Length: 343
Image (cartoon, rainbow, N blue to C red; front, side, top):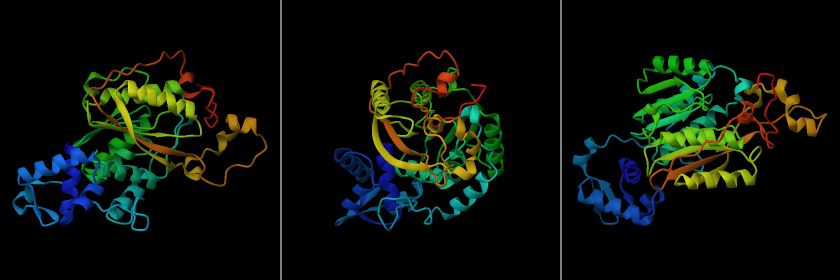
């Protein structure tokens, strides 16, 4: 229930709220929400005055939480980075300009920097960042640094196969004075180190979208979680993952006692100019099937953001047999993945 507690207190830091204002900005069932509200009253952390709930002054020093205002005023649902996140937005944009370019042999491609920030905000909004231990598998998007700038996580561990990104995050985190960040070089096909298993509250990853690749990426992340109530976030497209593949993913998650709570369609776009994919387009199956087309003039590749949550003790994920590294990156739906010689 820590998530619900944090979400209630986060709202009350900015002032008194009605029941309906509080219930709008929390993540649990009504039953769980009411139980937590009553508990906070019993513990004399909050009190009720008429139709409003407010923090008790004596308890304010015991509440380390901050409240970021992120909701778009125009639609009431979107994320507005020009509100309380403007300073983080400026600093993060400066950081990402120095990142290493994508490597095609790892099927890398980073999302727009503002989409990385939006993901960080969404994780915060869902109560999965404050005082949490966060595990990130693969991070050419530099989400690690976006979360670090928010200064809310207890600890962040990022594991990454590309030593360039490992070194970049380490060096940047050191310059920022972020001691809570741990960066390790790691290949997803290898067993997860025992020190990382069952040690985290939240995970984030963007798997390669072959069925075997998805099972490896999500499986390793699931191994990192402590148990019931923990959460995970991952990107998934409809471009290289058909409905049938989504169906298999959902079965895989359910077998591990994880349930999908959110899907935000087309949450992230991948910028053509910054990723510099032009030299690989002719190796895409897409352009072999439909030849003689011009290079894209828009950012067309995008992914949805999926949130999952453990509803019970986590069952061990089953990992597939990998005959070759190629199987990690290619299947019958890999139509926008570059073919290169060393795969």
